[in-house]
Length: 383
Image 1 (cartoon, one colour):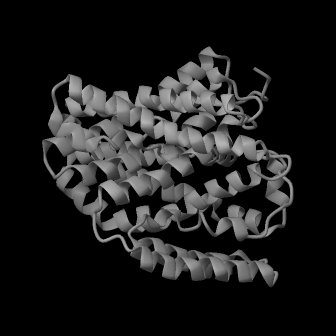
Image 2 (cartoon, helix red, strand yellow):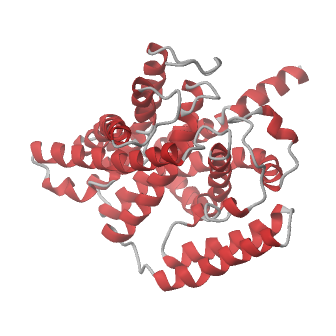
Image 3 (cartoon, one colour):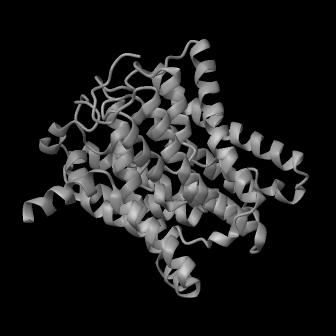
């Protein structure tokens, strides 16, 4: 019995299923007793979204950094540039489709929400990709890098077009420069314990983003590249990484399990939307994410290759379409855009529901992946 539970628990952790459990729980709770859910979510929102998710993004960046090392799927600068350009396309496509739909339906009051479908939720899109692609498939680091770039571009859009408060570049620079300098100094003096990188560099970076008006959940993104790591990549999610002694891999081993519980609370705190909120605004957001993302991502990937850049080896256009649909899960950042674009009321509720409906991009992407022959338990094959 104990061995069965351990095997079950390993499956839960390996596939981030606590995230799905938290999401379903939050959705049910909000529809059964919305006032108590709102009080609960408001209490934990800052701790989960602004502090806890720092560690999820840190582990995602760790995999991206390693994938860009010699032997990694994004080793070539020509290949690494493609997902960054694709991230821009993955924002332009959905935004354009959103504006087109709102215009054709005669809903000018929805126009301020054009940026809502620009979002790609790293947590849920990554989870969907793990159910679709083999663990060594280049689409996974491609999607992770694309999602990180999407978030960075999204924060710029949020600051420029939807300022929720005063954005202070001065405060950001005054704290981020010491954060990077301190991290570089730790690296230069040969510090191998990850805690100084986390507490000093990460702490200053978090303060820089928080006080500068940016989202602090990405605080470790500029810090991780300076943390000591291996010189070569063993392969994406290679099990041999568990025994590597470098600082970055020890950081990952320490935080891997806690991050799963953080993801549970992330889903619980953010998924509470009443089902009665569905409306035309919801479908506009959903359609823009489901179709605009793959159109923009595949289109800019094709253009990048034609201009002389190179997509990661083994990533075909049909695989890129599947990945683009998986990237259509907007959720968290889409909710940020929605609350910034609209005041409380029916339109905001519809927009939020559209962000939640984007979860259906996951089963659609999984189905498309099966149609084109993708299986998560198979080794990568040439297209």
